[in-house]
Image (tube, rainbow, N blue to C red):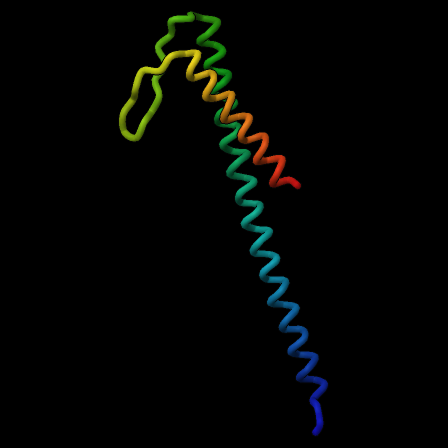
Length: 99
């Protein structure tokens, strides 16, 4: 029985290419997740800054929270607490993703 060394080498190269493609896909998905989290964190940081302006300007500012297609009144302190919790969640998730 003779073995074709060229065919074995080609199979080995193909296996390595498939393995590399899988790694590239995983890296791309990881990068996308990271970008999404960073974007969401940045948005929430901007909201936090806006809420801080509202606190400085007037403690009785009217804050609205979007729930589906509806805007509901929300207490300023509740909104601030919610944003702080979200930002902490983003910190934890980003730390986990970055390794």
